[in-house]
Length: 214
Image 1 (cartoon, rainbow, N blue to C red):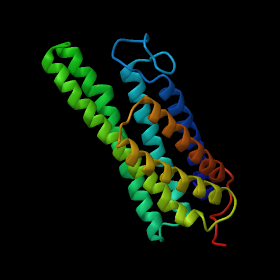
Image 2: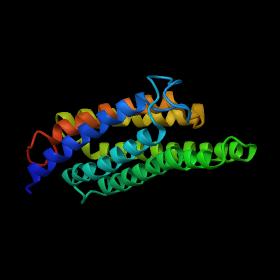
Image 3: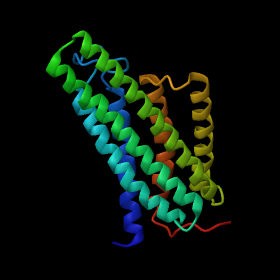
Image 4: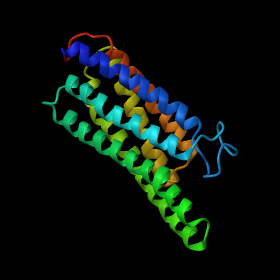
């Protein structure tokens, strides 16, 4: 597989993953009770939503590896961004595993006893911590990659500027809201990350040679 074909494939996977993630987030369950109390759209199955979201995160982890290689892994900022992105996706996957499978499995086995309520609260705190960690690492990757992207022309420069703006907004949100993660912040961050990802994917699907510095 040549580089252009790999880039097109990776760009298509990024588009598919972010669009699927947006749909899944809209149907993100707000309880374990079924499709009756969605905050955005009707709840879908907890395990289905989080399992599918994990698949999207794995795809993003794989596909953005091609983007890092296109930026040039010989650059320290690109290598650091790649590490931050990989760890961010791992944190998000762990958060989905906790919320989608560990919490639901605990409830299915033991019901709503006081002990289970306490355990669910602990798992909820762990889920929020992992989600915040994932967000912090992902925006750090966007900012680090922007060091290289801002030296390029066209879509990479636009995406780099957007990535810096998102990173600044995320930092402000973490300071002001102190990590009070919930469905609305998660949806907002998914939309912003999706917009940035679509710019990157569009550039990758152009099939042109690796960009050079201006």
